[in-house]
Every structure is written in structure tokens, then in C-alpha cells.
Image 1 (cartoon, rainbow, N blue to C red):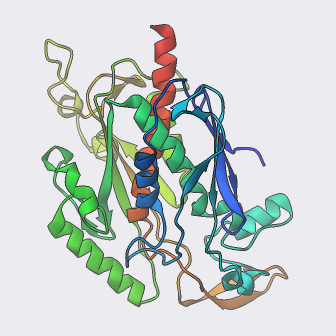
Image 2: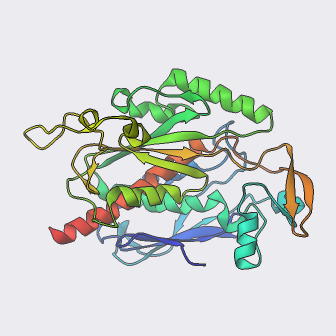
Image 3: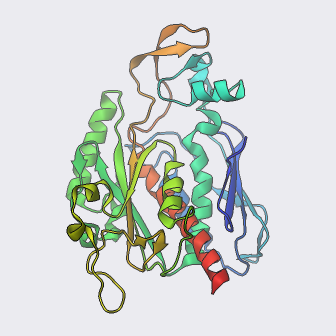
Length: 353
């Protein structure tokens, strides 16, 4: 299967299935001599792992990372970094009822038609469990970037929306609640919404906002490798993502040019930041900010019509352990993919310097 590698200089290749022995990855192109904080890497994994709160899937996985190569005496050697994350809590029997059935809005049908077969246990390779490997690589990229700050947070769940501008938020509050929204009052409303949806056996979508600060000027490669284009590809590669906008986004289409233009200060900064820190596909030194839209999780614990592999419409009901809302656990994934994009352009920019 092609399409398992992300990046140009700092490259990540992932492998493994949801209910296989393990998932993992190989990071190639990480510069040598980077002293790694393994506790920080595991902390990022703990933010993504299942079973961490009452509003996420109750699958219990420690998601402990085991590094196999590319590290000596706690420092990167410049050679490929291999790692595995063992699956310890598979319940493949939860999926036996869909062995011959294609679940609505899942990858079951498309995978089988493309490859001639599919791993129906938790979706196999199409499962969001694959994203754990991205978090490992993103955590290492974050440590290399050091001074660049990447903060993502839940900005909406269903119709409950955080409307404060990010400049007024305290990012240190993001991880103080289960939904990972830095506004506690709004967070409680979101949590109540998710709990109510879960009781119905249903799911709900939401959005994540990400802010990248202290980005050096000049990252991005016109014309096809624009910084925002690669950020968009990175975000749209995450399971359940349905949309990406940066800067003023779709709201900018309702403005006039005089409303939207970012006027310069004498030092090259701008008085406003409708551009979202990127102009002409190149970072301009201002904050980069974007929003990612996630659909409701496709597996619902309600009866629905589905298609079987004989062409019949049959009734099925979702089983197993699933997130009623994927957004809270996707925060570290969004940050990780952002870090992978930024580190790749950062290393390329260093080659020019």
C-alpha cells in the first residue's frame, strides 16, 4: 500500500493495524545530537490514548513507546528512528458481526473494492489507532523546534462554540478538562453535550483550532509546496477530518479588500492577521492559526441500514468501544501533524541559510 510516508526531509513512515500485534513507525531525517525527553514523548501519547476519560472510548491501551533504533545515550544519531507501540487490549470479536457487512460512512467498502480484501477488526489500517505513531514523531519534532510553540484546543462540539479569540485564551488551561477546551465554562457545556449524545448511542462532531507561534519568517516553498497547502494536506490526512481553513478562512470571502488587508508596521509585522501568518505560501513571522473540522464518528450504537457483500441492504448495530466525539483525543494529533510540517520546512530553510 502506498501513501504511508509523510514529509520530505523529516520523514515518517507508519505501519500496523488497529487489532494487529503492534503499530509503529520509522522516522528518517531527524538531525543527530537531539537530546530526547522521553517523558515528554510519553506525555503526548497519554493525551491521545484511549480510555483516559469518561467521554472517550474505553479501550484500555497504555500506548507505551518502545524505541528500536536511531537513539544512543538518549540522543538521536541521525540514522532512522524505529519504534513500536504494542496493542494490548484488542477485542476483535466485537467486529465479527461486520465481517460481511460494510458500515455506513466507514472505509470498509472502499478498502475492499480497492484491495480485494479488508481487515474488518476495528477497521484495520483505516483505524484512527494509526495516528498514535504520528504523535510519537510529532513529539520528537516539537523537541527539535524548541522555541516554536504549537497549541491546539477544542473550539466547538456540535453547536457549542468557543467564540473568544485565541489571544484571550490561556493555553495552560486546555488540558485541565476532559474535552480540552481552555475556557472552563464552555468546556463543561461541551462535556455535557458529549455525555448526552453518548447516552443516545449516537456521536457528534466538532472543530479544533491550532495556533503556531514564534515561527521564523520564510518557511514555505512556492508554488505547489506552500506552507498552508502542506498544513492542509497534513490535517486532511487525519481520520474523520472534513475541512481545513487558515487565517480568516471562509469568513474572509465575505469581506472587502480594505477590510481584509493586513497593514504593515515598520518592523514588518502587521496590525491585523487575516493572513494567518502566511502570505504567498510563506510564513511572515506572525502567528499561524487554523481550524480543523471533524465529522461525527461513523460507528453509532443504534440500528442502521448497511450493505453486505452480497449486495443486500441489512440492518446492523454498532458494537465495541468507540468515541462519542473524536475531537478531545485528536488535539495531540493535530499538534503532531503541524509539528511535522513545520520541522520539514524548517530543515529545508536551514539548507538555504
